[in-house]
Length: 260
Image (cartoon, rainbow, N blue to C red):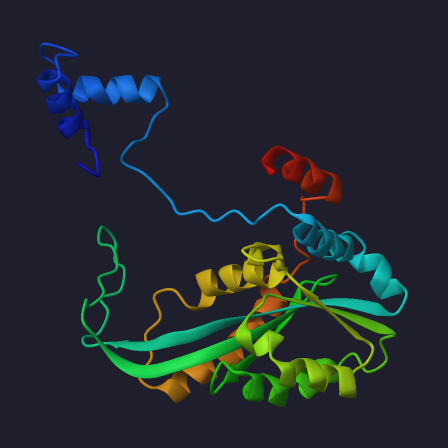
């Protein structure tokens, strides 16, 4: 058996002679008292706590710790991330809106209207975002929007650009484009299996919870229009700097605990 319930545990306890008789509700009480939840699980992937992880993580955390001070000195910390291949879905039947005593009812079946790749930029010291809809999630489409993305910081002495190891980020063409056209951009890659160090992931989670869940769009162009109207509203209503609590000393303690 690969997945356990209180009933299957009760049956196994009796078959193995652990208890002559036992009910599933009694098993539930035992599990609750022992603070065990065998019916639940979650995936996890721990980055390798080696020197490369410590170096990359420390550089990124340093930027978060000093984002406001850097801004006052003419430098800016930016985080970039994509939400690729967002499905544009239209429900086959109209949604029944919430009414007193009745929850909203949504049609199960839907019509697909293609996908959209959504790129977001987070300005760390303000929490303000900017979004772009890309035709494809590749280096060419990314390079096409980088001038507009960086234009707002033409006067910055330095730009600390944080993103993960996505193929469009690490491509030779993207890195050459940045080195050749924007030598004041300092690119910082998150360590392998540690994209959660990128605050833009927090932004996409917060944005998606407010503007993507339970959506219903009749076409791809309608969805793009929705996204282009949504990120300015997010800035007006919700944007604020994220509180980053994982410090460099905490990171070093974590590495010490997980190192072989």
